[in-house]
Image 1 (cartoon, rainbow, N blue to C red):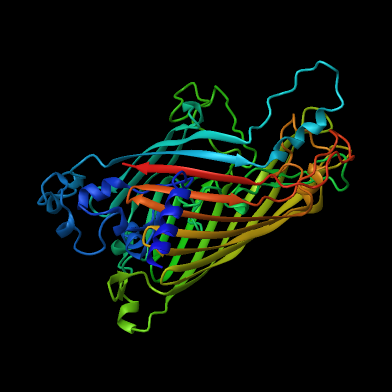
Image 2: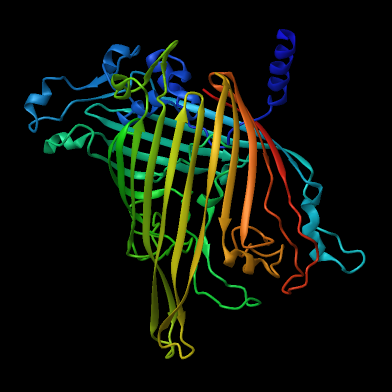
Length: 528
């Protein structure tokens, strides 16, 4: 029996040797500073355990007696006595004793269904001798993300974080800045508020979502986070809508955030004010100076309207351990040492914006402006029991729909554009280095379905999912991940994708029966 179990474990290790998570942001620089393993803060990096959540809440430092645990002391920027002389001198601070830089790289191996090229049915019948475009391969090796990141604390409870994808899919041009911010922890102390009740963040950052997308451990993103609200724009479908809002929760915010409480127990809230961009483009007037473009302007603008979007979240976590004293600690007491609490978190969130569109009016010299309020609202839960974690989220999206009058003298309110959906995911730590995963994603959008009718594979995708077979898209994704070392991880997932139909370009004739383009992805990642 022991030999059989050993064979199973070896087989699982071999099976997942080529896999990994899409977005990992463990910071190995912290391991160097504190002389500890990544597993101190992470269950299966980048997923945080309760201690890791407390470390992040405290501004990337140990929540208690931080100085006693630092193996590499920080460099003082000024003498402590300068605190007493302020404001007649510069207030002293610190920088990390080593340059807190980490690197990350991952690579992928994809296997897709043989029906992936069904889309070429739109090209037939064609002119004999015509050269067809390249087909999608059944298997493909793909370089992933090569990223650099830095984070730490400047003293006075001022934390910093910057991460940048230098190269994506082997091309530097695909790289982009991730999060980059300063975070002023516990500024409520200046107003005599309870400890950790008010923290301030400014820069570019992921919204305080119920479950992170930027630091998710899954290979594929949450479908509901990438859902843009694109109304019925298809001329072949009835009920046209003047809604083309490209905002999604997967994008980074530019702005400020106020937050408070803890993510490892009790209440937690966040309120953000951020730039709005619902069109996907920005103005580039050379006569308007910008901070990064200088007097020539045209560089650095992100907003496409004067309105600033608003986002709010509130959650409460109930630690359910039997020992009342243990519930209030950062981690619960276990038979073999500290462990994560048994807990239940319930939360809600709300996002509000007002997209703006301009068209030339009836006289040719007047400009009509349509302001279409939109919101996203939902709820979430997170339940953890020892090695088992179950969590999920629901979202409802609503955009007002203003149609221009035929006289081009104004707008009239019409049927709003709506969608809903979410996900439920579970993971189980079979062993300290082996996690199994199951996820269900669901998105319901009538507009996505109608926009897919007659859409052309050669043109831009008119929706969020090319030519879905129905209003509702369900995706099931089993997977597994394991740690080869604390900083080297392998993963595997199999996406059972929603059905699709290929139509004749610009027509309603079906060229295929419903089919699923399922995808198996394996990857390998290291951080250093």
